[in-house]
Amino acid sequence: MNKNITLSLDEEVIEKVRLVAAKKKTSLNAMVREYLTHMAERENRAKEAVHRMREIAEQGGMEVGKVTWGREELHDR
Image 1 (cartoon, helix red, strand yellow):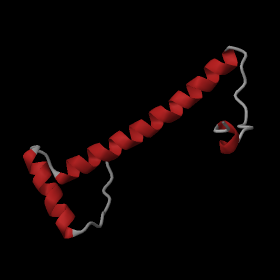
Image 2 (image 1 turned 30 degrees about the horizontal axis):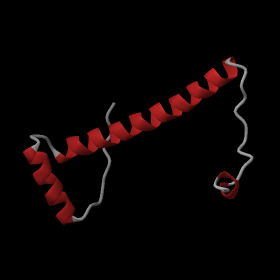
Image 3 (image 1 turned 60 degrees about the horizontal axis):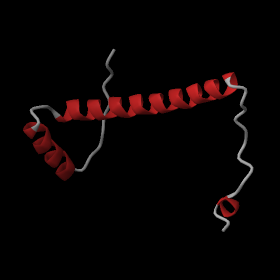
Image 4 (image 1 turned 90 degrees about the vertical axis):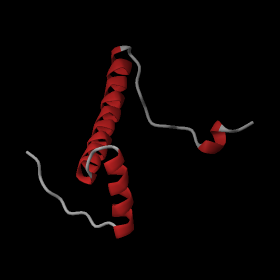
């Protein structure tokens, strides 16, 4: 189910984006919807990847622990 939201944007930004949308034969609304959907999917994929890496590490007998080193130690030359 779609829900409506209200956004506040500068008029100049709206006009510029409407021109971009017109060139792409789409609407400002569709562009915002596509961008937000893509962002949500990307965030979800990142979380799933981390979860899967932890599962693989545990299956292989490895443990993913806390970071015990600091930036200075990592770059110590």
